[in-house]
Image (cartoon, rainbow, N blue to C red; front, side, top):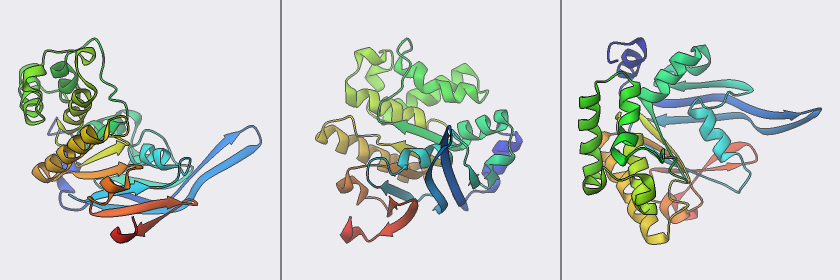
Length: 244
């Protein structure tokens, strides 16, 4: 779908801001009760930049990530992805933009259990309308890069936790997105495996010039990124690396 308006917009924005949030607000309503998560939040993520978002549990880090990825809608404010105003897009166009410009990695891999590692990684490519053979080639090449070339025909239940998460990283990067959004992507792994997966994400980030926005509680890993932002009382504040 390289000739689609979404793909053209992604290409036209190359080198600019990948994600921009302006005056972002989110309030949850239950009956007469209103629970504001944040109000007036601002964020800019540059092309190729790596950003960690830290903060206390319940501060709204996952909510923010969902808004940036177009998986949820803000109460007020705007999110721009590769220059595209998310609120102005139809549901279909927003889905196309997510598939083309964004990759997602969660604490739990969310691989489909009935499909092999290869088939799981192929899916985002096929959703973009690419031929099955080409999708398989791209997925296999990336699985080999993450050290799973010998496991491509294995289903998630036959993989270790670290292998499943590496497959999830491959799936997130297979379309060479402008930005990967990670929600505690190593939080379910032991320390050694977490460090391995994290370094893999950074290596692929450098190779593909993909931006990373990672929510993490692990401040040792956060210090390895370009910037560390703390979500506190509904606002983002930048931390000096020495203070992380």
